[in-house]
Image (cartoon, rainbow, N blue to C red; front, side, top):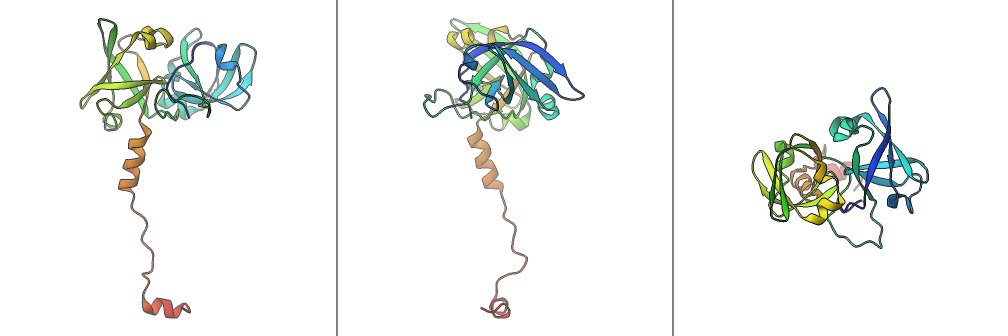
Length: 214
């Protein structure tokens, strides 16, 4: 589990392509301080497992399904990525609950500066937007952000200077694809409300109980 508070900006060192998968190599420093093989690291909001480590980089395997559903398929050597280690019990919970399991992608359609803030408009599918609410939380490329506006085709976020300074958001431009993970609480509520338990094949009656020795 993650919080959406980016700890470091890493650089894509190398991408080894398989038939439908890739091995992603990322250079970084802070993220590696207490990282071990098998640990989880959020890369642009995607939970990846560390399979190899060196003093200044790590490698993670990216399966075909992850490539199809995220913007990792567009990465190339030299690109910058947001990095966050999995949450530890000692950490402050500064963002919101982020699983690292991407719901889908969105496309930046507008970037507008307003004094010390920058408004970013992101177009997304109806399947994603149904979980997006004004003043609610959303993860954009692994960054915990507050939704300021939402309608049937898009939502808007307002980014403060600190977020711009410590994430890859300033490098984004109109037309770029971003990873989106909606607030997990809403998804659990929807699932529970719509869940219909399977009815028993045989109704319990007096005859049924007698036939089965009760």
